Amino acid sequence: MSTLYDTERLKKADSASILHPATVVADVAEKGPRIIAEGKGCFITDTEGKSQLDAVGGLWCMNIGYGRPEIGDAMKKASDQLGYFHTFAGSSNPAQIQLAERLVAKMPDHINKVFFGSSGSDANDSLMKIVWYYNGLRGKPEKRKIISRRQAYHGTTIASASLTGLASFHRNFGLPIAEVKHTSLPHYYREAKPGESELDFSNRLARELEDLIIAEGPETVGAFIAEPIMGAGGVITPPEGYFSAVQKVLKKHDILFICDEVVCGFGRLGDWFGHRVYDIRPDMVATAKGITSGYFPLSAAFISDEIWNVLRDGSATLGAFAHGFTYSGHPVGCAAAMANLDILQNENLIGNAADVGAYLHTSLREALGDHAHIGEIRGHGLIGAIQLMADRDTKTGFDLKHKIAARCVAAIGELGVIYRPLPTADSLAFSPPLCLTRNEADQMVDALRKGLDQVIGGLNSEERK
Ligand code: PMP
Picture 1 (spheres, rainbow, N blue to C red):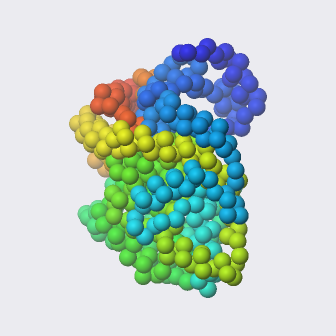
Picture 2: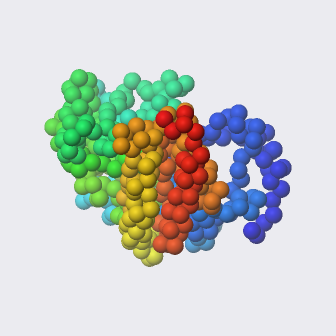
Picture 3: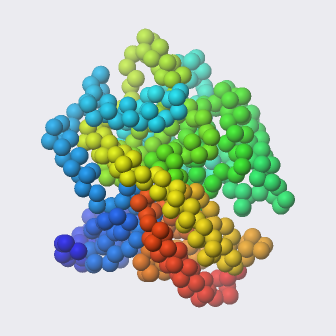
């Protein structure tokens, strides 16, 4: 490691001064944090010199890999030229214009406009507000409800946390807000009825969605939001026919489709975007994370021509579109995104994600497909999850109170690889940098197998139930 750190002092200072996100407040205050100091390729190193393969890519965002000086170089150049200027009231800057051109070229033909922000949450908030604005302008101001799915993850601001379908993000905050409703999650393995085919399951879920729309009143429902593959809710891949069945229902009731590509976008699935993989025709698309591989906080929210035309025509009556952020179209962030896109493109990292992703999924199935406590290994490209099961024959899950996924992740971490526990789904997730090599994929599989054996082999009879 190039720098020496006084870890104990840093830990004390951290505990004395920081409220950590998504952390048990008392735990970190007492034990202190783990402090990550450096990263290179797929590996991160903490202040005590311990290195691990980060098989989660930070928070599903480190697409190009750690330690790429090209990003810093591009940001320095941009910052030296124009460290900041706002984009309100008709201002712009060359970096956001170049980035916008490049991004919309990667969207479907009917999507040609982008709005920049700083996070996945604000992208979803912005799109939700645009749904309201758009429907107001169309003379349908009551068409405001947004339907999301249980176990979805769309962010943590008041609106986006409402869209999120995980109880812990609602409990204690008085959420969700009244405009947000949730429908079933499309997890075929756990939610299908005995004997139900994937297609039948998808059609049943589409009917449930339509029942919900009708119960709420189609004239009150503005949009449906979905991740192509649900990330934090369990890395749930859509079953056969799911999105086409859902889209038929939405079209029938004049309801927009918001595709949340915050995790799936920019190569994670071995293609530029998840909507291309699953044949989704979105009206709006939210992106963040992989747009800069996390090197700078940036989001890009896209809208269709149809929505844009309504907004443009509405200017005459409404005046300014009164929404935006100080950092919308930040020139330094846009420069970081362009350098990131250059690396993704020039090094064919998306092709690598498809290739090494397929290799990884095959290796995982070979190594663990018959494991008595693994029910399903799912995912696509370089994202996936391992479903733990107390009894895979009867499809009985472990009691979540035993926190077996978290214990497995801790054991695998000791063996040098970071996975992520997804408590609601009792699964272990991975989404490594897209520069992952086959050799590193082998390390992921090896540590996973050993860590699972250690924890599951050591469970007592009560925990095995
Ligand atoms: N959408 C999805 C699918 C996400 O996974 C996340 C973050 N994990 C978000 C939105 C929110 O992004 P942010 O944390 O940048 O607000």
